[in-house]
Structure formats: structure tokens, C-alpha cells
Length: 415
Image 1 (cartoon, helix red, strand yellow):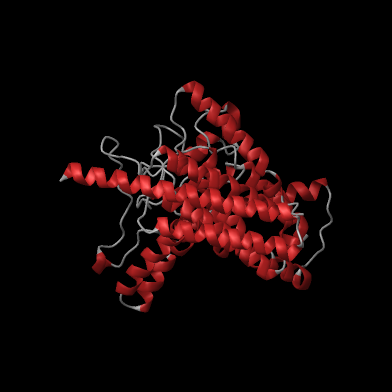
Image 2 (cartoon, helix red, strand yellow):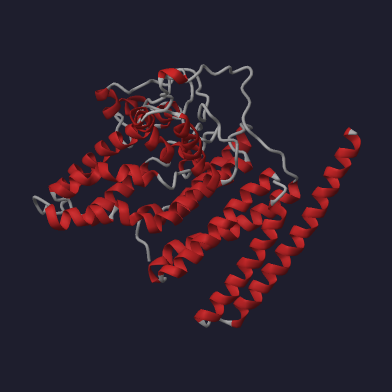
């Protein structure tokens, strides 16, 4: 079983999201949108699933350096725990800051900033590729001699702390604002207004931003999101969008030197012949409108049904994955990412998703039956898989017919 505090905190995350939803209901404030919140959580699912394979980069290199090049073997006690916690948070600040100030690294972190809402579900919205650009910042701790197990545990605590600061329901917190990262400070960090961009990179302690000149007080309410909105509910696409965009420009930029600058300078940098650096534009708050798509209630209910099953399967996998072989992990991860990606495409009502969803239902059902047969599970699991296939396929066919009929009626009226 995975003892990662991040995974163990999942039930608490959803409990707090539930409380925030209740607050939304009583306060009459629009804190959540279904499509955005589902996409946020889908990105978290995707990041956790791909992390099963990518952690060999983040943790594996640390372990190799510790075992072969550590200068010391630092004992574990309350004092070294405090030192390690401060050190991890300090290095997190620099990894986070560079994720904003280096275009290539920004591609891994931009996912976390794409949501135009600000609520606890945004904390779960993480980029799958971010670990590729940030793991190296922690390697000095391995050389110094901090045990890998202690490092992983403390890093997880720094991450878990940051969940609660993704909310608009908590105002400023008095003297804590002086040295702790708070919801107010982090709302600034998620703002796309020029005065807020690249500010407040702290994990736990805001003192790093105050020390290194990246602190900004929350003044007017931020406009959340990024300057080039992704406009998609698909968790796979939102992870790839920035890199596809970069590749398009990289092919147009002439000269190796300029190409390298484009990769490693700040987002917005271009050579002079392409207009030079493009600073973040001011937000026209009167004209600004969030990306949104309208999908019928029956379709939303279908997505929630599939999504609830995907969440349960993800939790099962994350807690049990150490007992699976590599091919079993690949199969599980592929099936779950396939599912959450289709959920996003259904919200957008893409023309191709109706066929793809029927393919997914068939493939997933066959996968469940094969899994049951392979592991010799109770016959009732196979009955459950058949019931899932019949329910999902019937529901999808009815939805498909209903949507096609509605679109036909709209087309007739417009003509």
C-alpha cells in the first residue's frame, strides 16, 4: 500500500471540497463549475497515474546520488526534520519560480494555472510533466545526506500544506500573512493580471518571496487563469497544449541561439524579428469572459457516473499499484486516462467522442472481465462488468440520439 501523504490525504481533499460546495450553496457565490472542477481533478488523476512511472526520475536519481555521493548520513530527529522541512520549502520556492521564468519548464507547470476559477479543486490540477523540470532542484539534499525516505515524506507534507490555500472563502489571516503562505497570497499567484504574474512562489513560507523580491500583496481581486487560455476540458490536451504551441514557434525561429533562448528564457520571449518580448497584457475586466461550454443535464449526469467509477478505480490503483506488474500498471493507467479524457471531450460534445466513448465502454468492459478472469475473482465481478457495459452503452446510445435530435432541431430553426 502507498503511504505517500498525498495519496493518503485524498479522502480529506474531497471532504474539504464538499464543505466548500456547501459554503457555495449557502453563500450564493459561484465558486465551482462542473466542467472546470472535473477537469481540475482529471489533471490530478493524470498526474498521479503518470507519476507511477515518472517517479523513477524524481526519486530514482535522488536515491542514486544519496547512495553513491552523499557527504554525510544525516540522522532523523526533530531538529533535522525541521532543517529538512525548511530546506525542501526553500528549494521548492526556486523550482516553482523557475517553472514560471523558463519557458520549457513553464510547459510542465502551466496546467496548474489554466483554471479560470479558484477553489480547492484547483489544488489538484497538476501537470504530468512538471517533475521532469523540477526534480533536479532537490538533488543538493541528496549530496548533503538527507535520507530519501525522509525527503519524500517531507516533500509530500510541503505539497499537502498547499491544498487549503486554493480558496476564495478564506480572507486575510492577520499576522500569519507575514511569514506563512496563505489563501490571500496564493490568490495573487494565480492571477493573470500583469501586477500579479510571477509573484508569491512560496510553498509553505512566504518569507522566501519577501527575501528575494517576488512578493505581492493581494489588492484588487485577481483574474484567474493564463494569458493564452487553453479552452479545453481534456486533461491530456491541456498537458500538451503549451509544448505543441512551442514546437510551432520553434520551427519558425531561425538560429540555434534564438531557439535556445526561446526554450530557456521567460515565457513571452521572441527574437526581435518576431516582435521581441511580449509582456502579459492588461485584462479588460468588462470584456473578459471565462471559457465555458453548455452540455445538457443528462449528459452531465452520465459524465458524473463514469467519473465516480474512475475516481474509485484510481484510488484502488494508487493504493495497490505496488503489487501490479509493469504491463498491469500500463493497462490500468491507460484505461483511466482514456476515461477521464473522454469525460472532458463529452463536456465539449466533440463530434468524434460519441464513437470513441462507445469504443471505450467496450474496451473497459473487456478489460474488467479479463482482469477478473486473470486474477480468479468472484463470478459476480464479471456480472458487474456486463452490467456496466449494458448500462453505459445503453445510456450513451440514448444520449447520442437525444443530442443529435436537438442539434437537428436547432439547425432547422436557424435555417
